[in-house]
Length: 566
Image 1 (cartoon, rainbow, N blue to C red):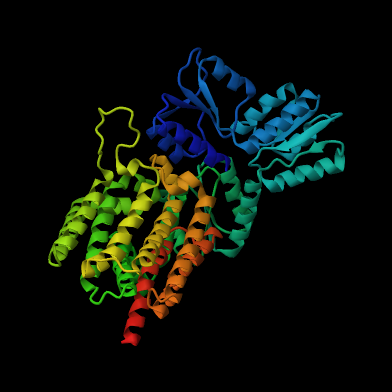
Image 2 (tube, rainbow, N blue to C red):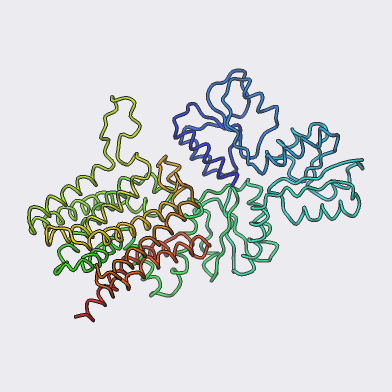
C-alpha cells in the first residue's frame, strides 16, 4: 500500500504538469519503476542544495525530520510520500525518545527507512540486525523495541522472546507492516504447495530478499528475478506447479509480464495439443478476432430478442466494425500497452502495417455490406466509424487556450463508456433499425442489456490495467472511483442487467424462454468478477479468454434456442 501510494503520488504530480519534480533519493527499490519515473521527467535528488525550485517527493521509506525541514528551507515544495505505516513507527520513536526512552530498532542499519527512523530517535537510537547486537547493548532503565516495517517476522519473534525473558520492562511494538508479515506467511504456504517459487522484485529490495529467504527456508527452489528477462526457463521447465510472489516495490505491470511468461511454460512441454490450444487462444486474442466474433454473437442474440428475421448481414457488420475499431484502438494505444499488455504491444509493433491494412479493409468491407442494405444503414455505420476514428484525434487545436480536454479520449472514463455505446448501437440498435427502420418495445431493454454487458467487460479490463493507465496519465473509471468502488459498480450493473432482462422476459417484451436463458451471461460475468476479486482467477491470457467468451455464450444460447424452437 505504501509503495503503491508513493508511486501514484509521483505519477499524479508528473501528469498534473508540475515542474520540475524530484524524489529525495530513489523513491522505491525497483529499477524498472525508477526508469519509468525518469521517463516521466522525475529526477533523483541526492543532496539538498542551498537553493532549490520545484517539487520534491519524500520517498516511501521516509527521511529524518531535519531532511524534510532542509528541503523546505531550500525553497522546494515538499510532498511527503512516506508510507503511513512508516510514519506510525516514526511517531512511536519520536514520542518515546522525547520521554527519555532508548529506542532499539530491529533492521538493516543502511536501509533508508532505518536511517529515517534514527533521525526521530536522535542520540537514543540503536540499530540491531543480529542477536549478538542485542546482547552487546547496555541495560536500559526504560527502552522500546520497534522493527523496520519490512523486517523478517521470524527474527523479530526471536527478539520479542529475548526481551520477554531478560528485560520484561522494555516496551515492544510490533511495527512490521501487516502486509509484509502476511506476504511472508503466504510465501511460506505457497512454497509448500508448489515445486518452485519465483520472487519478483529489485535485487536491492530488502523485503524482496526476505521473501526469497523465506522460500529457501522451506527447501523449495527460489528464483529472485527483477524482470521476465531474468527467468531461468530451463530450471522452471520441469516444475509442474510454479508459485509467484513479489516484493512490495514491484509494480503490477512487471508481475503481469512475468506471469504471462510463466503462463506459457507448460505448453512448451511434450504435449502438442496443449501447445496448439494455447497458440490458437493467444492468436485469437491478440488479433482481436475473438472479440469480433463475440460482437457477432452478441448481435445475433440482440437481433433474435427483437425478433429480427434475417440477422446475418447485421452480424457480419458487427464483426467487421468491432474488428476494425479494436485493431485501430490497439495501434493507437501502444503506449499504455507497454505496461498493461506488453505481449500485445510487441505483437502490434512488429505487424503495424499489416494490422493497419486489416483495420481499413474490415472497416471498408463493413461499409460496403451496409451500403448494399440501403442508404440509412450505410450512413449510420459511416457516422459510427467516423466517431470511432475521431476518438484519438486532437479536435481542439493547441492555440485555443484554457481547454483541458482536446480529444475525446482525454475525457475521464470516455473510453469505457463510448466502447459500450458503440457496441450497443452496432449489436442492438443497428439490426432493428436496418430491418424495420423503427424502434420496438423490446429495443430499450435489449440495448441496455448489450451495452451494459460490454461496459462491465471493458471496465473489468480497465481495473486490471489501472497501474499502466495511471503511468500514461489516462483517466479511466477505475482510476476515478478506485478498485473497490469499481468492483461494486460492476456487480450492481450486472444485477441491474439481470433484472431488466428478467422483467422483459416476464412481460413477454422479448421471447420469454430465450430471455431467461440469457440471464446466464450477466450471471457468468458476476461470478467471474467475484472469483477474480477473491484471487481465484489471475490476470493473464486465460482470464481474458474466459471474459470474452461470455459473448459467445450469448450466441450459443441463442443458437440452441433458435434450433429447438424451429
